[in-house]
Length: 169
Image 1 (cartoon, rainbow, N blue to C red):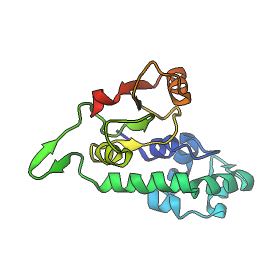
Image 2 (image 1 turned 60 degrees about the horizontal axis):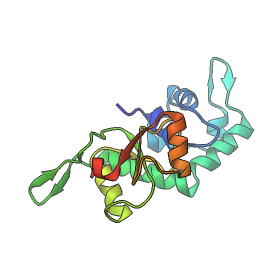
Image 3 (image 1 turned 60 degrees about the vertical axis):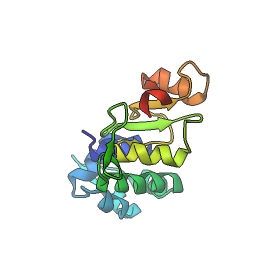
């Protein structure tokens, strides 16, 4: 099951880990909308067990949280949260070949269709899309699992499961 701290960790918001997000959530910012509406001061003043995030770190977290890349990923996550978990074409349900419900998925290389179409299929299947491989990534979908791209190298070093496009679509 995908939790809010894991989602926020998966989109790689700089200077914040799942522990940071657990602290934020524990003081009442318990939805994506509430977290996105936090000011730098709100973030800086989050304290748990007499520890505060601090102004400098809060400014960096706030800037990263509102960067175009993270904003786009969180917008997509909102769509995913409201979307059906299967793709419907006419009256036929078309499941993907691999279970992706709640999994953080990153793609690299050229797939069998336009990137936007592939992303839409992944979102409809319940996947959370990431743009960079990090410790929160569950799957890297690629053309060739023996390739040499930087995403493949990082995924391999982190133990991320590698899938061919043909295994998923």
